[in-house]
Image (cartoon, one colour):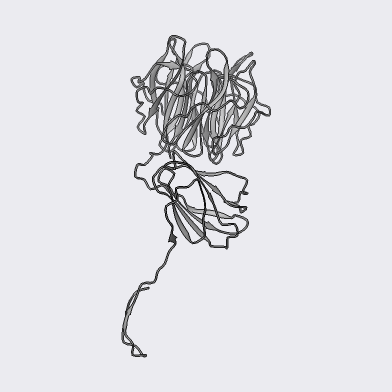
Length: 420
C-alpha cells in the first residue's frame, strides 16, 4: 500500500511508503541441478546444459515457486522437475516431468498432499511463437526404388516447403503420430534390407532427431495416431506376417513394448486419425484374405477395440487426418484400382459411406492436420508412378482440387503434426 494520509481524528498526516511484495527473485541458475525454495523465483539458464530442479520436500499449502526460461533454450536443453517425494498434478514423484518449450514460464503452487504441486500457468513468452499445429511429411520410397529420409514442412496455409535433407534411417512404409501436444514421432518402416523398429522424435518446431533404438517388433505398414492426453499409439503392420500388435507412446515420446490388440484383425497398409475428445480411429488395410474396410476405435486409455463392421470401399494405402477439431476422414487408397473416394468420420467415431473423391486417384498417400486440427492436407502417393501433388481439406471435410506438387515425388512416407 502507498499514498497520503489526510487529516484524521489522530491529527496525523504524511506519506505511506510502498511495502515490498511478491516473490524474491534469485540469481540466474546455470548449474545442472538446483534445489529451490518456496516464495522464490528462479531464472533457469540451460544454454550449456539441461537442469534438474528439486522442489521443497515439506511444502505448505499455498507455497509458490516460479521458474523461467532465461535464455529461451529449454527447447534444446529441457528442465526436469523433481517433486521431492510429493505429488505433481496428482501423479506420484516416480513420473518424469519435463518442460521443453522455448521461453516458457511456470508458476507452481502447492495445493495439498493429493494433488501436490500444480502449475497455475505454464505459458511461453512468444518472442518467436510456434504457430498452431503445422505438419511435416518425411521418409518414403522414391521413383528409383530407393528409400528416402527427406522431409517437407507444411505451414498453416497448407503450403509445402522444398525438400530438407533428412535425418535418421532412410525408409518407407513408416508411420507418424502427434504426441505431447506439440511434438511428433515416426516409428518403424522398411529400410530396403529389412523392417526396422527405430523411431525419430520431432520437436515442436519440426526438427527430426536422430534414430532412437528399436523398441517392439520391427515392422512396416502400421498406423500411428495420437489419443488421450498428449499420448500416441502405433498399431498393426507387417513383420513376418500381418500382425495385431500395438505400442503406446508416452507424453514424453517413449515407446512401450509390444502389447496385443484385443480382437482386431492383423493388417498392413492401415492408418488412423483423432476424433471426438481424446479418442481415435484406425481403419482399412489388407491381409492375406484381401482388402479390409473394418475399423477399430481407440479409447482415451489407448485400448484398441475389436473390429467394427466395415463401411466404404475396402482398400489399403489411404491417408487419414482430423478436421473440424473433432472429426476425421480417410481418403484415396488402392482396391483393384487407384481410388479418389473419401469417408468422413463423425465425432462419435462412425464412418460414413463413400463420397466421390476429388484430385488424383492414388494410394500410399499421407495426411496431416493443420491449424489446431481444423483443416488438413493430403499429399504424395502412387497413382501408377510417384506423385507430389497435394490436396487441402477444409474444416467441413471438403477435399480441394490438386495443388502443384512440391518436393520429391514419393510414396509410403510418414506424416505428423507439430507445434502448439
